[in-house]
Length: 213
Image (cartoon, rainbow, N blue to C red):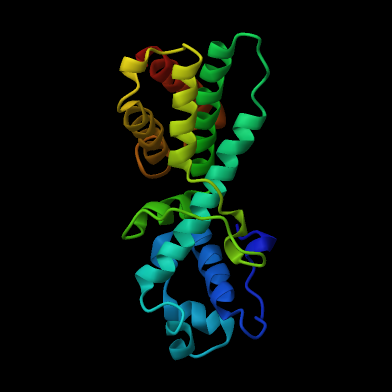
């Protein structure tokens, strides 16, 4: 379903780029990365395709912009998970809770926004969102999810939850696990799993990641 924030609208002078990205994000939410087509977005914005190509030289350029928005939303979901993590006196246990929280947020975002999640990884290169300028459609883009993951893993070392010797490649292992489950849930044999089944599988996955680190 297209959210109100993604509904294309007429653009003001000088804001065509954002109008195109907004339309592309809305299309990706519903139909995934294949729906991101420069000419189609130009038509929705009510401009010629030549005008659109002045901002995006290719479909890949537009898809990368869409991926940046998706990454920003994913990062925001992960940060929300961190903020909701209960306080504990034991800092080591809290750092483990925080790792679990971002893993759960990652998978929940993929299930909630499968089209945009697919678009993130369909881009030719992995985009790294930077702090947006005021009024930019990528306003939701913030910290890179990979940066958030590494930061929390560093917390595990700093609090003594895991030894420093086990830190290398932990981000690759943890990311592979939650991304793999996400893919199975939206494009694989686990598609159509109930919310209860998803939560149970996700809890078990987080247990395994925690024990493995």
